[in-house]
Each structure stands twice: as structure tokens, then as C-alpha cells.
Amino acid sequence: MKADKTLLKKVLSLPTAPFHEEFISRFVFHFCRKMGIDCKQDSFGNIKAIYKRGRFQPIAFTAHMDHPGFEVIRGGKKPMVQLLGGVPDRYFAKAKVIFCHEALIAKGRILRIVDKKRRRFWAVSKKPIPKGAFGYFDLPGFRLKKGKIESKAIDNVASVAILLNLLKELKRQKLKTHVICIFTRAEEVGFVGASGLVKHNFLSSKIPTVVLEASSAKAGKVKIGQGPVLRVGDRFSSFSPQIDLWLKHSAPKQFQRALLQGGRCEASLYVEKGYSVGCLAFPLGNYHNNGPKNYACEYISLNDYQNMLQWLVALTNGPLPKEVEQKEYSAIDKIFRRFAKRLTCIRCQAPRA
Picture 1: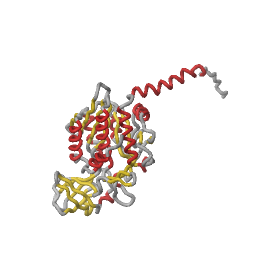
Picture 2: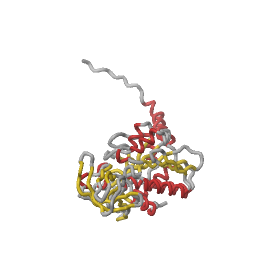
Picture 3: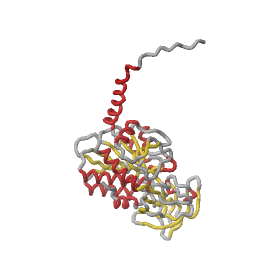
Picture 4: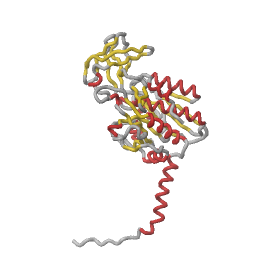
């Protein structure tokens, strides 16, 4: 079982930004329909793809479709744009960028900052850019280099690609399982799509859920190429211990386990709302296009991507979280029954005053 590099290239090359995930949304719908997988959308534009073969308890995987970018708030050949998401202002000023709007794809560059508080900049392009267009750094959509996957938007488009790869693999192997893949919007500006999903119960809180992410390897003190990460928490909260046990039980030989405090992810929101949730993450280089000296491609390891796919397939084809939890704790009970008789009461005499 190998990762589909062609699929990965197609998905990573798609334009995206917070509130402007339409290119990826259309691709997901087209891909699922072609594969014969049921696909639904809620009123916020979040997508639910359902693979069901037999009667089984469902498990869910989620990934957000956006990456930090900008939108055009005043059109023309010298448009005004507003940054969306965690991109440093110092890297954005004078950057080369791509503008997108329906069939329009145009190159341009950022001139200077206009309003620092609202993160607004003047830009320039040879073509007139309409208000409502969006854009991102002018960087390659996909590049393989010395075992690394490089892209303008690994976070979190690589997770979208691997979920589609998972659905393709489930169909190919005709696995008897029930898997729900959720694709959310506008995560980079505060979990907006996921918040709408939770409020309208687009994904039941009774379903064990795994959030897929790409998180800064440097901030999390993990190694790129040493395996995907079982993320036990972020800088906001810890995740569900039952799901942690389950993820660890099905992990490939090469994986890492860490807190990853470099940022927050949607798992924090799900925890707060009462979901049983865990997180798997790609160790990411140049997080949010923060290169050593300027904006640059994000990158992950191809080996980590391959191991992540194997991990996801194992999760869909193995025991459920409750079964793993019962097995783990029954082992502890067995030890207790073996040694409990040795815990005779020890009489303690209080020291004299």
C-alpha cells in the first residue's frame, strides 16, 4: 500500500485561503462522487464523506481545507488586501503573490502596509483584480525534493489529500468498516467552520473523532522524517485519553508522541464540546510559510506521509476505542488481583510531639 502521489500533487496545487476553500471543496465532491462515496455539505460549507460497508460503529477523521492567505477588499490593478491567518506581516510586505477569482489566476506583489491593526496592504497586479478575490504566496503547489514534500500549503491541505487517499484505499480493499471524513473551513482564523459543525451537530459527539493536522516540528520538538505524531494536546488543552490509547494501539513502528504546544487545533474545540477526540499530526517545517529568512514552502517527510496512511487504514480495520481501553485496563486489574493480598494494612504510629 503506497501513498498516491498524483492525488497528493493535485490537492496541494489547489488554491485556498480562509473562507475561500471552493477549489478544494469542488475537488473533494468530484473525487467522492467518482469513487461512489456519499458526500454531504452543511450550511457552512463543511463536507462529510461517508464510507460504509457493513454495520459497524462509525469513526471520524477531520481535516481543514484552508491555509493562511489574504482576500481582496478593494479591487483594481492596485488592490487592497487583508491578511487572514498566522502569516508574519514582515514576510508579507513586498512578497510575490497569486490572486484567484473563479477562472482568474493572476500574479502580483505586495507593496506596503496600509493598516497594521487590521493587517491591510496595498498590492499591485498587471490585471485588474476584483473585490472578493483571494490569494497566497507565489510558491510551488507541489514539489518532491530529497524525500520531502514541499508546498505553498501543507497545513492542512496535505491532511485533506491523505483522507481522500484513505477513502480510495478503503474502496480498493473493500474493507468492512464505517468511516466518516470531515473537511472543515476557515480553521486558520479561529475554527469557524468546525464551530458551525458542532453547533448544528453535523458530526455527532458520540462518534470517536481524530483530527488530522500539520504542526510545527520546531515548536513541538519532534523530528521530521521520524514518523507522524500522536498529538496528545496543544497549547490550549489535552485530548481524550481513551482516543490516545486507541491511536497508540494501532500506531506504525515509526511514530512519535508529543504535546505539540506550537498552536491550537480543532481538537481543542471538540474536547470543549464533549467529543472523544484525539489528533495525529505531520511534523511540519517552515510552519505557515515561515522560512529562516523569508517566506518559503512548508514541507513534510514523504516517509511520514506514507506511515500516516498506514496508520489511518489500521485504525479503520482494527478494534474500536472502547475495546482497546477495556483491554488495557483489564491488564491492570489482572495485576491487581495477583498482588492485592500483599497490600496488608501497615500500622503506622504517629510521631510524638
